[in-house]
Image (cartoon, rainbow over all chains, first blue to last red; front, side, top):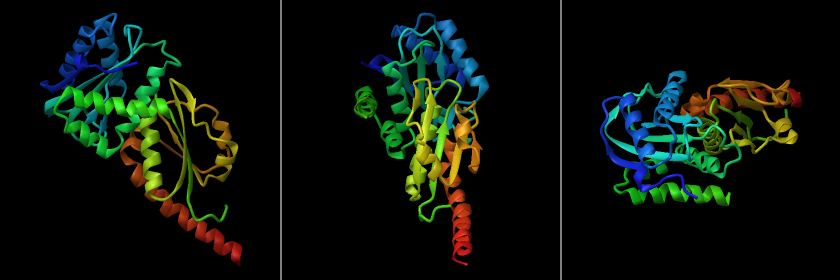
Amino acid sequence: MQIISKQLINLKLTANDKEEAIRKISNSLDEADCLYNYNDYLANVLAREEITTTGIGFGIAIPHGKTNAVKQISVSFAHLVKPIEWQSLDHEKVDLIFQLAVPESSKGDEHLKLLSALSRKLIHPDFREQIRNSKTSEQIIDLIGNSLLDAVKG
Amino acid sequence: MKKSEKINIVGVTACPSGVAHTYMAAESLELAAKNAGCEIHVETQGQIGIENELTPEQIKEADVVILTNDIGIKNEGRFKGKPALRVSSGTLINKSPIIVKKLIAKLSGRKINNEVKNAQ
């Protein structure tokens, strides 16, 4: 069971604004075959941003789309070369993006537990620091993978 | 109010999509409360369903209830008569340490007052 793969990690993403970042990440989700429909997924993520910002503070944003345009629950990670504005709750710019793709009908899915475990991990400053300092995709997969193992055990 | 020295907090978190904010808010509140030496139990109402469901005992023991107000909370009737604080999940994610600190200041005063009253 996996929700992140090397294909879904970009350690040097360049984007001028939030919409460009979301488009590029959605594209990588599409290329990794996580989506049925790129346009519908993208529209869903952007609509979610309109409700309230997903800039949760600490330099992190978690844009997410929950729609049947998603084939498989996935997390795509990007580290931005240059931090961008995300109307974050703490007014800080964002440099780490965890973009989620969740099928509308995924109730009871074990992958959801992995997402909730990752969300909880992001609250911990040491975890954020480890993610921020990661230089390779393997490190990211390892960090996220370990947090998910905890969830399965828990 | 019971005489235990620890401030006892229970919370329920929920958010529109139920996949991320719910859990971040819960974790943030738990972490802040534990760091401040409080007793803490947080129920999450996400897409997975209800997890860590609060027991009647935990609710009874609680000095304060913290509920997120992004969307409706299920079974809110359980908290009738309890002092409740309603905040957004985003506020909990970012400001739990400050919220907990303020609650402790407020509740400690009340506890001491009650104990003084009880002693008199």
